[in-house]
Image 1 (cartoon, each protein chain N blue to C red):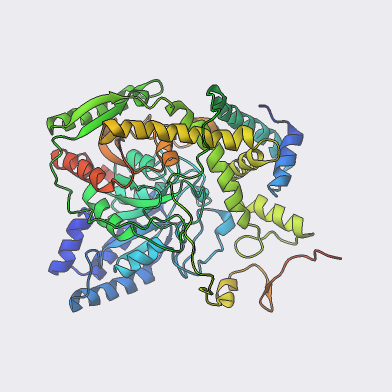
Image 2: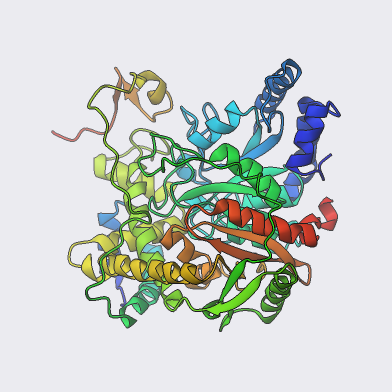
Length: 95
Length: 484
């Protein structure tokens, strides 16, 4: 699998990563090499093998639907980049 | 004092040979004297450590002490520490002061353990050489031109150089075992779910597991006893009794069945590493163990499989680093998308970006079956290999890493060459099994590790098997000459 410039730009966009124009060829090369490694997987026929999502066979624990967390908003927001009136500030989204 | 093991320090504290404050000051002095050269710490928490040491001394005097009260340890900077910077060695989290303690940190605090500081690591635990850290590479105390391994490289170095008697690590694909091997210390990756992941910054959630790094199996047993146990805040933490890991350390191993996977001794393994491991296996034969050759036929698929599963999970986990609620934010964002993209573009280093992109690609529309689903199927086959092996043997042994420590810069431009440094450790994470690395010799100045893999929740046996070897050999007692 060889990725070109537009593939890298598209993936970087999907991942919300700004990448400088100058670095794109290196990423294209590195990612292609990694995908070539990954494609060694195709050497084995896995038809009928159940996918393993998790190392242990366990069911998800359930709990009562009750409030367990205390309000710690101020504590958690003290190191946020920008906060006002208990809200996280971001650039205007809707004009 | 710095050459004593955790077990010896704990005994000395209880006997009143020294106080926790004296001990803590001694290690802080060593960090000051040596860490400029090694760079094993990102943050040293001197004042906090001394306050914790005085409290430990009070508990010791009042008869309220637990087995490790007053012993100083270091935490990998992936564990959230309340009020202390928790950076994960990334520019992204350089400004992040954690607002709570990870479960592992909390458990050590409650046990009265003193935290010396936060150790260096590969950025977000992605790396095998500790060269991807935003705070610069860590050097191997056995040879400062060599890497310490990674990602828990800072923890391994701080223990090897006697700057702390033990440290916590995390292991997603070998990140405890491989640096332990390259630095000549003892490290244990427990069974997936044995130790709570709460407050441990997530890399690949189905693989990540925390464990102890120390100089002996006995010390790892003492640390694991504090770390292990159920925690309802981690949905995959297993509700299962924690045995006394020190109780069976001296058990007889004369009928132990050891499996040597032929795939772990093939192409790519450096002959001198193979030789050190073979000599270690001979030692086990002398102790009465029975050795059989086994096969783990899908071994060569572990690295390709891992480099789908781990990046896919990391691309999802790291989406929370978006410059909105915590961590790095770019200057003057034009709009929300610009804020996300530039904050992430500036905050993450190249290896983290590569893995996020590989994961994003593997999970993107139209590619899911070819990559992620295929990898999960292979994961099942890799896991089945181990299941079959453990019908035949009690433990599996082999090299931890194919080579001793390589030179700084040697593999940093070649991601795939770097990934192959974890060729013998990755399958264990995919299967969720426990594994250890124990020092078993040297190639020149650089240490070699013996890997011991156990069945699910068989940590006590692994520790017993490692301890018996350490009673018969002295590799684990060797210290790097410049830091002895």
